[in-house]
Image (cartoon, rainbow over all chains, first blue to last red; front, top):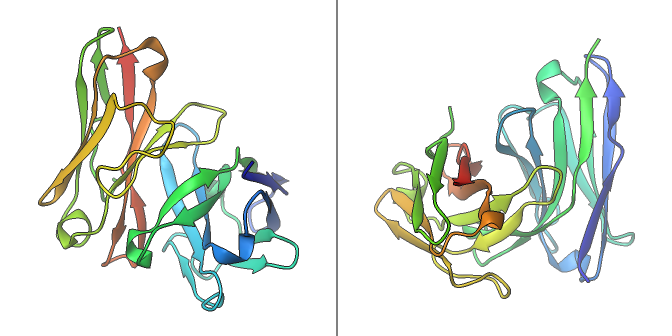
Length: 124
Length: 111
């Protein structure tokens, strides 16, 4: 069974940092691009970041709202995806989902499997 | 304001048909990037309903169908059931933003 399990969420003050992790199982992690999506309270889904798989695993993409503050990485030896979040703001408060991509050309990629999310609360 | 525009809510009686629109522009849907659709219930993982405009993953009932034309796409649900009540989102890629964009979401209420 394909599974994604997020962890690392919690409460942090504005300006603080958190590192989210996503443990993957049930599929060949290194063969797939991965991403993070968030859902803010009372609002919809927002794409956050994407990392390609090998041989382009150094290629990343970020939403304008997080570029320069968040960093996405992956450890294929541990089947784990990460999101380092620095300079957190109140409006970063959200449930953060880890998701696996499928598709042909990257502009047509889509998320076929999602985790259940981890809650990040940024508040003073 | 989402780049992809969806109606905030739609409703229908059990057994009826409803459609949810997703309107974009020349930098996303109109650029011939694929549209994908998700169903989301609070507290759960979003579920893929339609990929590549009109394809259903295995396990998704054929009551769900997708279409795309010019700068818009639509999700149709026939034979409405009570457990179809959820939030629905479209997803595509936007070349101006160099990233993926979701619609604002549509709350489906089964009357």
